[in-house]
Image (cartoon, rainbow, N blue to C red; front, side, top):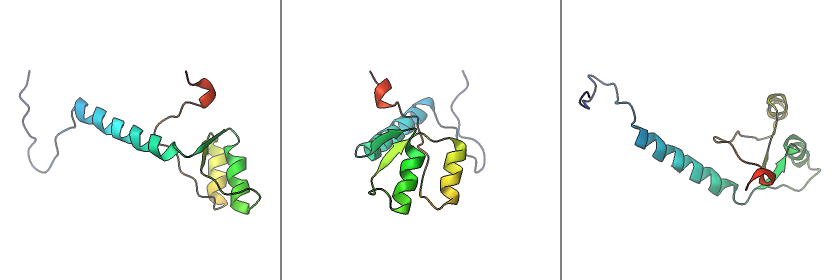
Length: 95
């Protein structure tokens, strides 16, 4: 096994598997906290987000599923949306 020696110059050492696991756990916890007070709307996400944007529905924090085309259309219409970094299991599929 080769020794763990820092690379030459200004190149950073590659993250260890433990570092990657810790980073993913931190991301997962942050996403879970952000979604704690959010309503799952499933495939109705684009319709609900658009309705809230134009004032036909009360503003709320929601998350759900949208196709790439739906997400692109929302962005072009000025609806503030952001992708989740990690996949979410829909409530009906959770154990």
